[in-house]
Length: 438
Ligand code: HEM
Ligand code: HEM
Ligand code: SF4
Ligand code: SF4
Image (cartoon, rainbow, N blue to C red; front, side, top):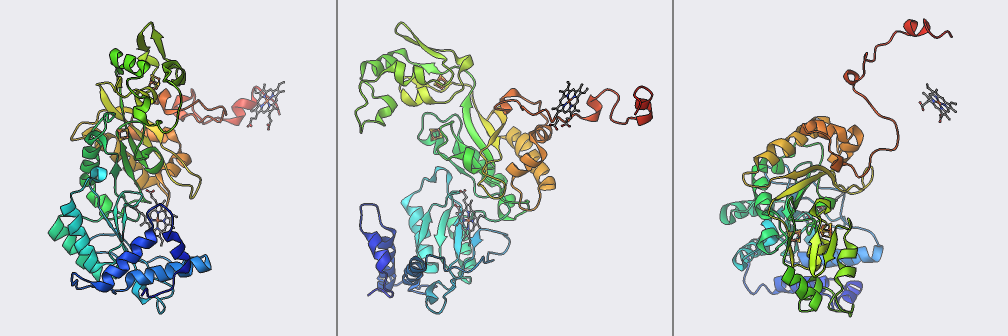
């Protein structure tokens, strides 16, 4: 017998999509039976009470979590999101319901052995409920009490060699696309760079020292499978400098219909016979492709490496061999002054371990600037708006590059540095009056 009536939630058990309600009910029942004889460290009926409070929220149309919550583990300034129910008498099982962020591996590849071990810890010391994964990337342990935080942390670190993720005004948990592990488009080892920078900046991740949060994300190519351009303050996107590699025989196999366009991604519907002119050449944003008889040609100088042709004909077209990445800065959600996507600040940089140039010539100068100049709770993107893109260029110590703007400014409110202007800014009105009477 379920502890609380949940008529509204029950409706979400129908339909084809995996139901979170059915899963929660199964977990509630598993805890009630406790066939494994687990020595539960938080209330056995935590999941029943979670369903109960959620049903109440469905009824009221409002949340039943109190504002905020400040909990954590010694040594760190983040990693745990404290949370308390505003109906603790009715739902004592979720009176404390803190979330722990656990650092995930690059590309989220796991062994069942590892997952079993974290489940064992969480079954005993938490609700057994998770989020796999948070939007930032972390493994999310959903729901435990304050006294269990140090216990979970001890077991994670001592038994599993596993750290917490980030939260607060600091470097958050970096995340990456699967990259070279399983993708032929990957222009650098996203997992290695993600892992390397996560380790390098552990201090910045665990102990908030910034004006606000800061995120890294790593995409192997412009397809952006981890959406770095929209969801990270510094976005690392792989690309190449030389020519796209063309296998003309495979091009013919696409034209002849032996190979399906887009690796069969549109096979659910009849789009007619593949037409290279219509589907590739006429779609190229820079119109830099053409057929020369039976040969596909690309004017690579004009290619903006949008990935379209490669995505359509992955067996015939391949990324170049001179690989690296672009760095874009400033993406953020709307609060406070509007949503932003990343702005190109480094068109091309090599991405080979130990990544010294990326660290010393880009990340750290940007941090030095933002940590001094950023206002309280001002994201990098907002500082860039307030102080201007030219400040980023000064901070990086590079020359302005036409690739950093989509178009030049149309307003003439142009600032000059005094030393750029002959005679400087100190002028005497009497000197002016000698030539112009009032
Ligand atoms: C009690 C209040 C809150 C709780 C418990 C909470 C918890 C969380 C958690 C667990 C995540 C996922 C972390 C991850 O994916 O690794 C998250 C993400 C996020 N939170 Fe909150 N949060 C709260 C309030 C807020 C508020 C007030 C804001 C904005 C003003 C906010 C903005 C965000 C954003 C933008 C993300 C997504 C980040 C991304 O997509 O990478 N949160 N939050
Ligand atoms: C027939 C000749 C001119 C016409 C019809 C003209 C017209 C205008 C107009 C319509 C404005 C905009 C006012 C506003 O939007 O607030 C303006 C502003 C201005 N004009 Fe002229 N103008 C003329 C000649 C000049 C010359 C010869 C100079 C300087 C040598 C000059 C200097 C300025 C300046 C400094 C402003 C103010 C810009 C600002 O601070 O917003 N104008 N003029
Ligand atoms: S972002 Fe590019 S390299 Fe990474 S998984 Fe997606 S397509 Fe592959
Ligand atoms: S990658 Fe894009 S811009 Fe470059 S040739 Fe292919 S379609 Fe054209």
